[in-house]
Length: 136
Image (cartoon, rainbow, N blue to C red; front, side, top):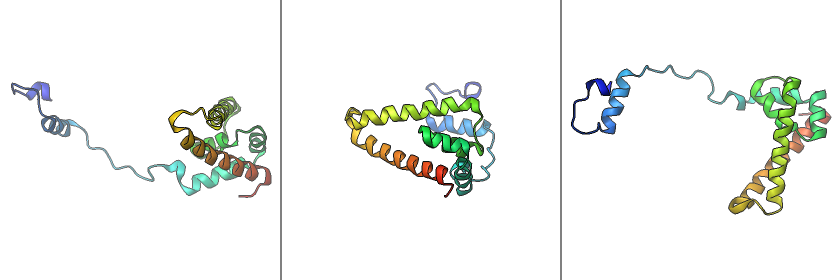
């Protein structure tokens, strides 16, 4: 639009560029439903229920229950076994990064990162108890 119609001697101003975009850009339909459906109470409740399973108990024993809960919250179901190794790897990555912060080697943000890690550890313990006991 600008290349075809702009005849000024200088580069178009931001306002002229914005106006050209508005003229040719399609109008987007408003987003229906919640912006982050994976954080809605029903998605969280469904994930809570899904981890109360044999896979959830295994994840709790092996330390990847938080990754499992995240998967269930985002996808609304248990992962296929082909995804389990990826979830375990994510949990190991967190454990390694958290251990680095616990050793004081997290750089300038070490204390903040350790406190954030503490919240994830607490969530992991909560979900592990939930999976083992079958109680929300």
